[in-house]
Image 1 (tube, one colour):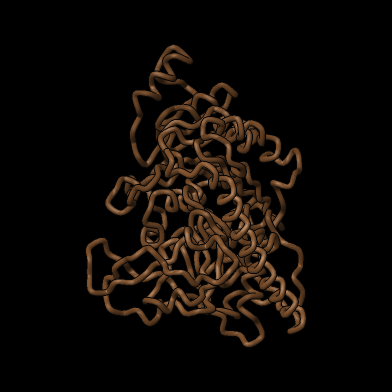
Image 2 (image 1 turned 180 degrees about the horizontal axis):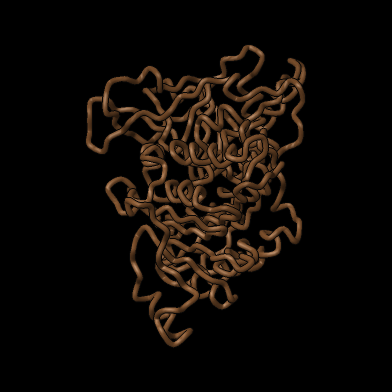
Length: 458
């Protein structure tokens, strides 16, 4: 998998100056990283758990230096008496293979944890970061898919390990979110982690080079434009420092967007959404017809302010008869949490016409607190303030999404007095009235424009 040349240069810049030490590049199948390091006059340790010297790497070496090998490149690693690789390096630049299973592969032969990390980190990305962090003495730079920054399971275990590895401080220096398109064989977004084993950092620098909606063809340009920002030479609103405590409070998320799109303090009355609502998740549906036919509310139904009262067109079939925990009621709020995140609407009498559930891209919120009105909550969710919170919680290497647990635990809702909520509800009623007037005016405009020469005359 080739990397954008601008990313290759940035990764070597992040390593810094090896000061005569070898730079360990264990997974450089294309030879790109090795060639760039040699151009800078560095020595390279190329020993790899994959034990593969690709033809592409040999060709690049031959084109650059006239022969497929160079005296500055070492491909052997120190081993113990049993022949197991135990070598370490002062500096490492690691781009592990993506999506490989570690158990039963050549990677497992390099495990230095006695098999413990094989149980904790089953996939190559997480395992390689953990393994080579423990094989590096001074500075390590890792590049991986962006899922490493926010996914649950083994990725979260890895983040907890990296964040707490330094004891009272952390060895994690910075996290950089990359745009989609930096990996030639995939359109997924990437990420870079920079760590200093044995070092002590009070705050982690979060940088987002992947924001915006530019073409994938411009990924290299985006990286080049953000080079000084990634290296800490400039400061913009796309970078900030975050404490370890704040990361712990945010489910150990390393996603820079979580911290760069913060909202102002909501005050002492703010509550997590999960303290106000219960969530109704989408049930399991099947393609074939079953006796369990229901209506499904999705993105296409969440365009208006007025509670949904008209019949819902889409029909789906459930796998089983269990419906009570997913069936919508009037007053429930449906919100999109995948794809186009943040669209929301209030359910009305339509959900009584036949059993209704939410689509796979949505979540339903049922207010359980007597201190919060559903109309007020909808107003806040759709406000610029609420939308800014939702934007900051979005993650995704491909399709943007918010996990239900993140939405319920991290999203904060200001809970004002009853009078203030009443005022917001009056605004809600006003919006519903104006929306209906606009529809009537649009209908009248269409009627006036077409009445002299109706379509039937064609």
